[in-house]
Length: 309
Ligand code: GLU
Image 1 (cartoon, protein in one colour):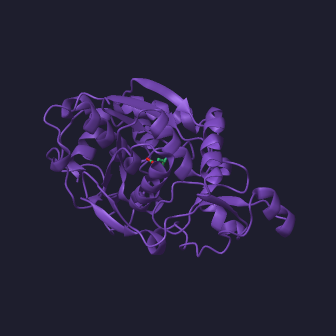
Image 2 (cartoon, protein in one colour):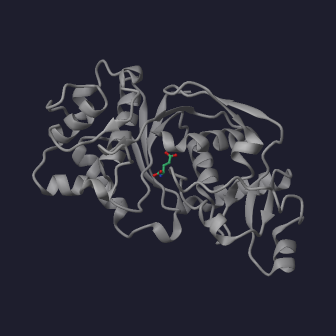
């Protein structure tokens, strides 16, 4: 299988320096090894999707100097593929309808970034109903669907950056949502169906998604598809050690761009943050390809303290 990575922005807001660093490193990691890239717009995130955010993300990525060989591919037109995967899992008794609280279900809508991952589901609805209709009849609610994780299992998930991590599947992950109550696929299922169908072999993203890699590995296995190679990197944090956010000032690419920063300057900051170039360097993504190696990226969290520092 040829090496293939993806850039997968969610059109739920504008790109900031933290997203840009992950995209830059995902791009470099694939380009430096001669692989191809796909741009996938993850537009299944229901109410959080903002009109025009897909085009804005595309413009920002291009402005930064990133490119791709295929896409943008959107998720919404692929609903039948996710539906088929759900049916397959349900048909084999690997997924079950669940009528537990709405809050729990909504948390499955997006990639569960740090802080919004729900508690491990205790399995309350496992084995309660044969199908969604029975669940609906008894509770009057639309069920979500959960993947029934294999009990008493330890799963080892390799990672090219953090090294392998072992997960106690039942205690640490629990039965997770693969289909939401509102009738849409959850992130975990959609991403596995897509990466698999789209031939993605390399997934590089923030380490807030490490537990998702374990969940996704279980889904790959259940669907009989090989998992991609994962690499999870530390998120960009502010000087206070907290994940980059509004309190650290406006770090959206848009604001830098409109304020006259040029892409080589911004990409230079990202390279410096990652230990790939001395601070104050100007670099375009293409300038960083030769000699790029994932193990040269600094393992410590990338601290952003403002331009030029
Ligand atoms: N669209 C997802 C996000 O923004 C990507 C998650 C992934 O890389 O699997 O978090």
